[in-house]
Length: 126
Image (cartoon, rainbow, N blue to C red; front, side, top):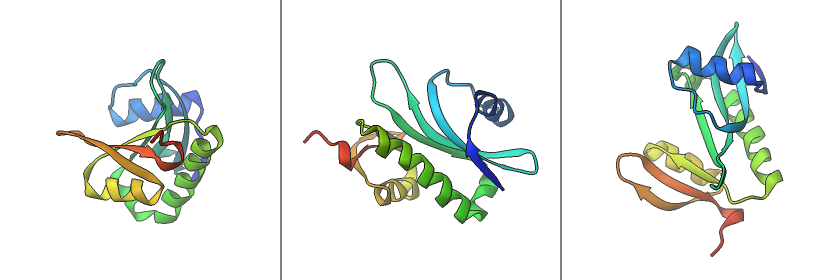
């Protein structure tokens, strides 16, 4: 499995192949590719006038590649730590919320039907 910083082509390809709408945000991301197939995309996206948001999207079969998930996570967290900005994470379900807590995010508030909005601890304002 190849892990690398995603190019613009990788990002466009991920959204085309996954059938999801391209968000159109500026982003810095990491991707994992296996046998020519993009397995996931994770990083931080930026919207004008809003704090950066950490995100992660992966194919279900990525669950079998825990070491890859850890390596990608470390690369994304390095992006967040280097910027030292207020960074949010949208975490779905109990597993997502627990994973975000392990990375250093705290629950800020719950969005009904959407999940938990979490704030990176090093950037809390209170």
